[in-house]
Length: 92
Image 1 (cartoon, one colour):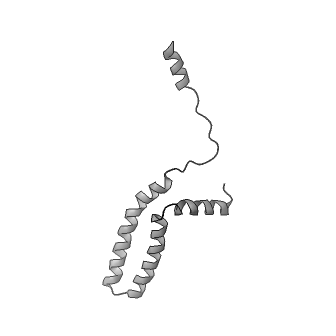
Image 2 (cartoon, helix red, strand yellow; image 1 turned 90 degrees about the horizontal axis):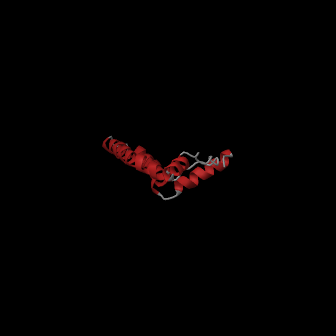
Image 3 (cartoon, helix red, strand yellow; image 1 turned 180 degrees about the vertical axis):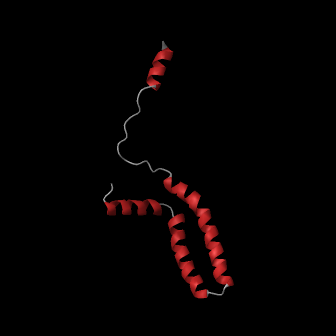
């Protein structure tokens, strides 16, 4: 009899979603996926600018790379930006 009740409770429907997105771990996933790709791309492009002696473009690229690096590697910045964008779009 105990097996029947455990089977019935395992077959019960799951609770309905509340309409909120579950984004736990999304920022960690994005950092783990795009972080190394970003570092390799920055390194290759920076070396290209240095070898072609385009110092002005190298400095401009370095400034943009630092801003993007801050977005990837500073804790909670992705969550803060996502909440700000969602609030600006009216999605809550």
